[in-house]
Length: 359
Ligand code: 13P
Ligand code: SF4
Image (cartoon, rainbow, N blue to C red; front, side, top):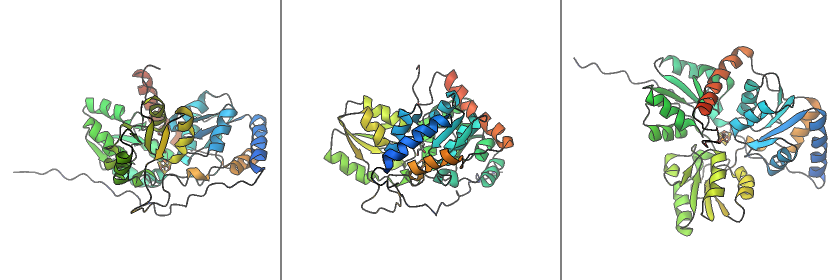
């Protein structure tokens, strides 16, 4: 008798419908200078450091670097906070970054300029539904992307960032493990193709990266035949196929500096150009098309939640202590296990989270 295997249960990701418009902070004349001066003073008075993501405004990135904070990708932000002696970390980014900082640094106060700064990947993956998905597949190792809530990380065996996802999946495949992957279906698809691992994919997506258009990139390549294409792996497969380099924000910035090409087509949030210009001076950086013909994006090439971070909000939280991140200890103690598993793997295999080996 031919007994067929039951099909795996893959629930649809929670639809993320209420994406806010991108609203950049507008500052009046003299206001920027006043805010920067006040924030500098408050950072010292409050024993605080500013830890910012590459997608936040140039004002915030500059201020973070000038005041002894850091600008980096999500994991390095948390690692920097851990190493810092400051008692307060102000995380300019999105909520999961603040939560990761808190999970790794429970003794520190973690503040964010705007607690409404979410992430469509995180929002697509509610902990209760994700738990049911995992329960339906008890034979699988649960691997989640950093862009998830603390509660989802608490349900996972491993947390990974985009820079190390392929290496972790390959390591698990070598041990004949089958995986659950959440929440980004495009990154999951990329990892699956790169490793051949057996992966069930949660069907979430990033509202910024899923809108990059392969046709538009092909047209740009025809116009600039010597250009290299740099792509963040949250982008669709049709875009990743055109890439010369696929990587995390840190890896793309490094590639921009290292590649011999003088023209670079970049498929990721355009906030990255601030640092990329500094690291690759003299090169022509072109935003990969996401708007234009057939565009449906509300947030073409810029994350609406990252844009919620501004100088006014930063001054406000430093003055008031509002917008503190809290993670219940029962969740934190489980979430930290999945994060530390990745950090230990990276240390053991000589890979930094930024993806370099041997440095
Ligand atoms: P990185 O960790 O590569 O900086 O990416 C975070 C992110 O949210 C990308 O959209
Ligand atoms: Fe999330 Fe996409 Fe914004 Fe990154 S760019 S924080 S993945 S919504």
